[in-house]
Amino acid sequence: MAMFDSKNKDYEDGGFEMDASDAETIIGSSVKVDGDFVSDGDVLVQGILNGSLKTKGNLRVEKGAKIKADVEAANAQVSGEIEGNVLIKNNLVIGSSATISGDISTKVLSIEPGAVLNGHCSVSSSKKQEDSEPADIQEPIEEDEE
Amino acid sequence: MYAYFIDSWVFEKCGRKMDKLDLGLTQKGASGRKIKMSRLHDLPSSIKECSSSGIKTFVAVGDDDTASRVMNACLKTEGLGFVFSYVPMCSEKSEISKTFGYSTITECVDALSHGRTAKIDVGVLSGRHYFITAAVFGGKCSLVFETYSISSLLKNHHISVCNSNIYSKKPKHGKWKFSLYDGMLDAVIAAKPEVSFLEKMIQKNDFASFSPDSVFLVDKITIKSKQKTVSVLADSEKQLSSPIVVEVAPKHLEIIIGDKFHAI
Image (cartoon, rainbow over all chains, first blue to last red; front, top):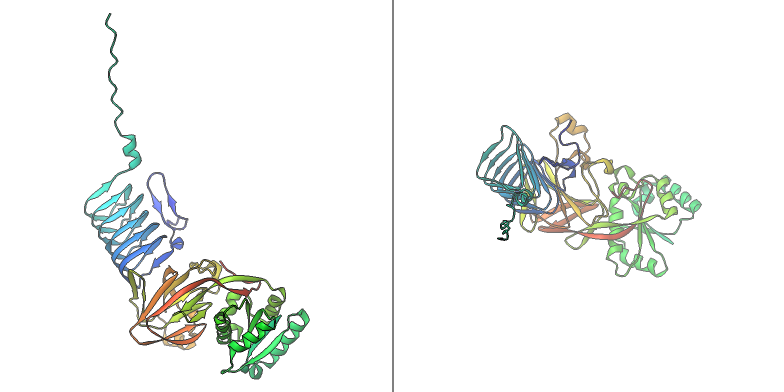
């Protein structure tokens, strides 16, 4: 099965796939972007990006891509290099060829063997946190003294 | 009522095609006023005159350059409610006719007689020049957005801002989603693949030989060049001074469409 042939998929177990042909913005392999890149849709990065990258949609960083920027996205699938902090709202999938030098913050994280990570990693699922909250303390019922 | 703006060279070079067009239009009841257009023709006054006599459909007959001239003159005429159409005399080279969904004389005559219309987006260069298909800029240009800029790492590339797809001959099935309705333009950096000398000699120097590498959905963008004057191919060739602001005019042009029209 081709990994990226299907439409964007958000799996319950935390996986995420973004279809390359669905990307609204494509930063090709022969292109260099300088500055604060902002987008509302899905972004596919194959080239070089320096500055910062923010998108309300999904992000896919392909093998060979080099990002020297803080990255923010709803979901992300990384197979290239990122030098900067990565803040992902939902799912972050780090591929075997990925190199990330920076702090990671996400809700669900999956890492393939071979990926390189240098930085702090914070994974916090708000749903799980709600579930794991301690129950309200109940006061013992006082028995009537007879 | 129709007004046909016919480029002067058409009478000299395309006599047979003109006869076929005349016959077809008469048979289908789509004939109208014919205006011979020379290079120094006063288009705005001809358009105003046609409009005052109740003509609402303006048809350019010639090549993409002719279509661009007529469309620009129509759009720049204040208060003109009009429908635009185009009969290409060199259909194999016409990007505009591909966009409109007809290329042969027979298809054009059918489209004109059926009168199906659609409102499409058009691009505007520096607030002055309108284009239907795409504005293609030569090398040494970069795309400048509000907070970031994009440059190509390759030598053999071009930058284009597209309204319709100039790269693929099958717009609906391409990877890229060029839409004539979405109120947006696609800024594209396209690279030409390395070819041998022999292939270079044989190959046509058209946009189809370039393959799009990067695409950015925009409603307004600035193109900067190191040169003061930039040569731009936007339906017709223009010389504009850098920086050039390209923006979209959403659903600004009503056109007659053919059966092959793909708005996406």
